[in-house]
Length: 75
Image (cartoon, rainbow, N blue to C red; front, side, top):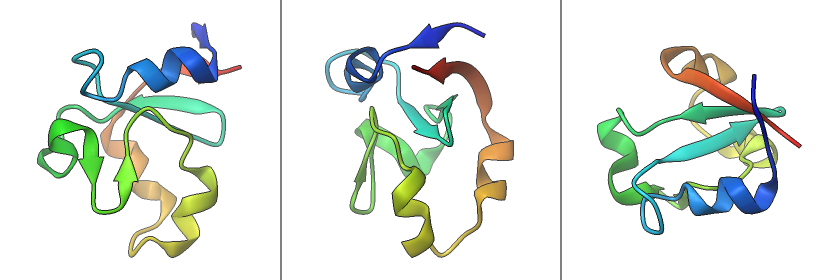
């Protein structure tokens, strides 16, 4: 898998570029197909970020990422 920096991930926020990506445990996922991530936001979360530390407050488990394509690794 291709490796992306935090700065490259930050550009995939649905605003600066059309891609809507998030990272979790070092893996970057394309969440652009989810209606819940429309425009790069999902409740109080923003695309283009590492959401590893924020998952503990979510009403779902990490299994939610199984629905999305892993497209890279976070450097």
